[in-house]
Image (cartoon, rainbow, N blue to C red; front, top):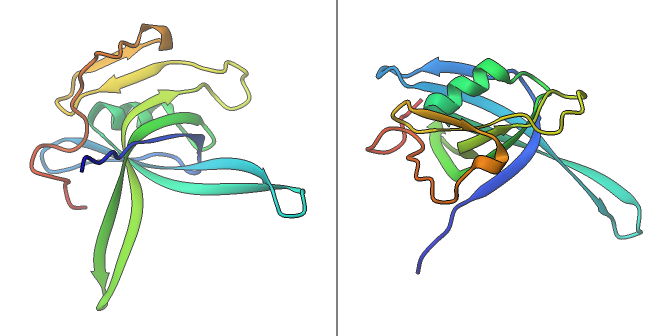
Length: 153
């Protein structure tokens, strides 16, 4: 049976981006975003719920995030879920995160611009910046870490 792993999130950065380079020279940036949701509880009162999501960006996406985003910046992220597992002091641990494959900068917080630029990049380092109306559904990009799987941190 086929499977589908896709996530689209809009939220605000919870911290400044942290960019680093792996030994091959590929840029990696970790960001965290807060996604807010508002719903009614059992008695009909509105309740605000915030979900915090860790996101890893690679190559040009990582560079763009590090250069243009800061704590509080609104951003749209499209990517896939990945479960990291490791062992610390004999205890198994795991954490769900998003591998960001596309980001869209939504402007600075409170400036009212409502939507700045859109950016896409391939893991080979090429990039294309387009406005929302210029995006083509037939664009074919290769996202994520280099072939051979995810790079261990």
